[in-house]
Amino acid sequence: MFVAGALAGEQVRYMRRKSRRKFDEAELLEIIEASPDRIEARCEAFGRCGGCALQHVSVEQQRAIKFQTLRDNLARIGNVEPGRWLDALTGPDWNYRRRARLGVKDVAAKGRVLVGFRERHAPFITDMHRCEVLAQPIDGLIDVLSELIGKLSIRARLPQIEVAIAENAVALVFRVLDAPNDEDRNAFRQFADQHDVRVYLQPGGLDSIELLHPSEAPEPLNYTLPDFDVRIEFEPVDFVQVNSDINRRLVAAAIELLAPEAQDRVLDLYCGIGNFSLPLARHAVAVLGIEGDKNLVRRAAANATANRLAHAEFRCADLAAIDGTESWLRESWDRLLLDPARSGAAEIVQHIDKIGPQRIVYVSCHPGTLARDAGALVNDAGYRLEAAGIIDMFPHTAHVESIAVFSK
Image (cartoon, rainbow, N blue to C red):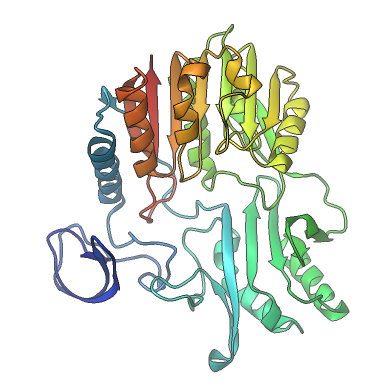
């Protein structure tokens, strides 16, 4: 029985919420005997909001829990243990989240529009007034967004807001199921001016996104990696790492662990807009980034040109559907960087003998699939798990990001 919100050693009263084949999930109702690790949550909505799960635990204990999760997964699923454990990559505990998707719901019973994350145990929008993990200034604009949408003619036809906070601007993408009228558009513009944000409307798919205000953005959204003299531009719905401070530390750590030399050829799979590829190109003679989203590939190539990194190239390919005949698999690669989605990199690991890198750095957002792939690399492909550690990308959540280093 997994009781969300309960800590090891506590006596609690709970309600069973879900029954599964091997375990049940439950909601915490009452703490009868508390753990000494329990602290007071900072956020008023904690316990109801599904955005955070661990605010009732000290940050140090949160990291200990995540470390143990990684260690258990590597041992139990992969039957591997690293030669050494890396120090956790840590950063700010609050106001760290620069990307988010906020739900919106016009709730007649409450007499207002709710804006926020989904509730923990129900498919409703949490009744909240601020968010302690969202980056500024959005952390304090929950009520203001509620008031804005409440004045619109389409208040019941606006289901979500995408938040993207760059170093040079704040962007909000409003998903609109019906077209806003002129008064609605003026309200959006006034809001944008008052709070110094860019407002986009999305009436359909991702290709329908249009900038409403300002009419022309002065420059694309961007973030920098100062250690590598790299500036990366992105669109408001592009994937970027949620935590900018951790991302800078992560990129530096990954490149240090991968240890590319001046004449090395480096393959960066699941490369996105070039977050690792472009810094790697400062150290290697050639870098090839491969990504399944053609829009991200175009963005990565444009970023390479803007940063004058002609030896960083990018291609589009579905890395979950490779069959071993791809031309880039038959090329010679000295180093490999992997940063897959939650499903992991099983298809790449199956063809690792064709890639043949002497060294691999694997950045993971799911310890279970990392452990699975680590087991295959170590027990089947002849690699050694040199080191592993956690990345505290999402403080106060149960999300475990990690990094692992393999050598031939």
